[in-house]
Structure formats: C-alpha cells, structure tokens
Length: 191
Image 1 (tube, rainbow, N blue to C red):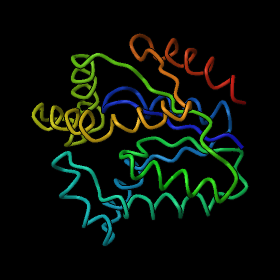
Image 2 (image 1 turned 180 degrees about the vertical axis):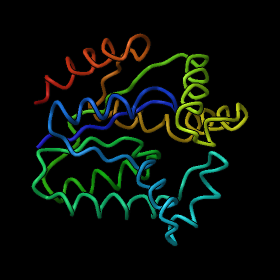
Image 3 (image 1 turned 45 degrees about the vertical axis):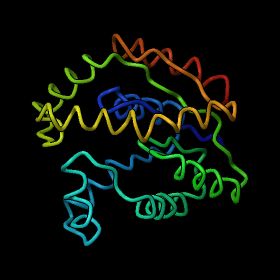
C-alpha cells in the first residue's frame, strides 16, 4: 500500500490532479474539502457546525477532520493506497495521521507539493467560481484570507514532512497534462 499527500494552496490544482492520480494508480481519493461540503449539502449536524467556519475561509477543528478521515480509512481497508487531498492542514493533524497510519503499518510515501504563483492561484479560484458556484471562490478577500491561512497554518506541514524525508516539490504552473506528467514521474518512484 502506498499513501500520498497532495499539498498546495487553494487553487493549486490538488482536486484536479488527485482525480487523475487516483484513477491512474487506483488510490482512494480522500478530499476533506469535498467530504465537508457533502456534509453541508446533506444538512447534517456536522455540516451545520462547519458551514460558518468554511464560509469565512477558516480551518475546521482538527478533531472533526481526524474523526472523518479515520472513518473513511476504516471503510476502505482493502485499498491499494490513499491520496489525501487537503489533509493534513496542521502539524497536529500530520502527527495524528502518521500515528493512525503507523497502527496500520502503512506510512505516507511522500507529500506531493504543488508550487503555484500567488496571482495564478487567485485567477484559478475566480475562474472555478464561475463554473462551480462555490461561494468561497467568488470573493477576492475570502480567497486572500484562505491563501494567508494556508501560508500561516498549513505550510508548516510541508516542513514537517520535509524534515522526515517524505517531501517532493512539483511545479504546478502550466497545462494540466504537463503537471500530471510531473506528478506521475514522482509517484512512480514509490509504486
């Protein structure tokens, strides 16, 4: 089993590339953002709790996300691997994930970090808002806050995995297929 983290600021292409990687390598794609949006759309109690947090571009509390991820891992025990998209977002979540995966003897192979310029991120998110209707992608102030929250709270996770030697930086600028080819070159080293 090979587990991968795909990492980058909002708009870096994590979701798009995760779908492609999951299909090619038969990985279970776990997107915390998608899971939380499903909860909101289903008007669950969890969805109601996190809706106001997400609408401001803030991070959902660790214990909620960790519980949700653990449930998904347990539901897919026969998987050939997992691709974590949007998780972990804090060093505390990274430690909790590593502990959870260690209990299953299946560590993180590497963190795939998509590097994208700030102006390109804003442009991509505004364009995505036109297509998806996601309210958190429509307002430049919310977008800037999301990127700032990523830089402040989430970027340290990259340092955590870099220090463990499980870190690969991948240029995230350019055509989707070119970025995918770059990611595949890295993933192939671990599979």
